[in-house]
Image (cartoon, rainbow, N blue to C red; front, side, top):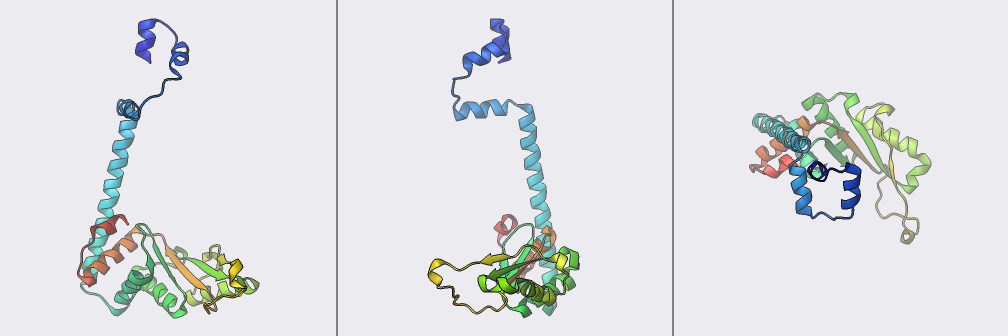
Length: 209
């Protein structure tokens, strides 16, 4: 644009009017972006940050592998529960179940094996339509199971009846399900590393799942 202004000795606004209907190809857009130093700096910074974050996740997994070599029964149980029932996420621990004793054990695993404090655990309840009339009591049941205050509770999800259900549900979960969430890349990646060490495999894609 500046080169055109200089050669034709016209204002930028005039040039803009002349070229506004010209459609650039994707290759031309890419070439313009590559010539933009600010954009290139952002790309380089973004790539560097991704590489550093991946290296941190790898270190956490290696730490988990080392820990798995001298495990205790609670640590093994917690890792295996997460392998079976946990949500695969690179930056947080998410674990859901309908069995109160399973939830209680996993909460104990987080506290005793990783030092997670009460204010670091979030509780989500997945309820059904017939729970709505006593939703507060159901939510309190799960909070009591894990020994947490009501401030740890997040908004519950309610699964209402479908039109074909005849307002009945086939499963008999008296308290629905409970999900525990801890936002910690270090913990979840350590668990991934321990699982691989326990089971005797290596899965590099776990770094990016």
